[in-house]
Image (cartoon, rainbow, N blue to C red):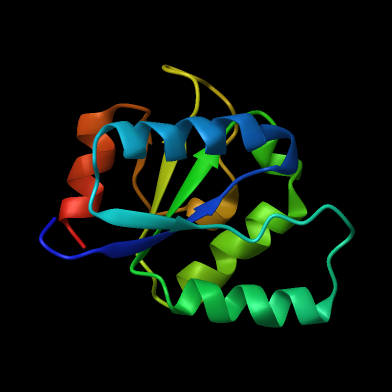
Length: 127
């Protein structure tokens, strides 16, 4: 990771604790990348979508945190679709090891891995 990559984190609102763990893990590893998210506390609208898509377009990659909540998380699924449409590299990250949580169809054809620092680092190194 020679450059400072901007990584968008897509997650279900109920899974903000996993986002916090990922950000904390990155800080502990003294990573050379920064995270971006567009968490909303209120229902999102077309302006949010426009702003979010602009942020996603400005990122080098996206990590989509996958849990049992992801399949019904409209905002997260929209973020993933936006990244795919904008050709931003995306990886799915299972929050729980060996989880059988349903992977959103927006990640079809994308790599989905268990949460390990080596797996995350390999994705980041590929950017």
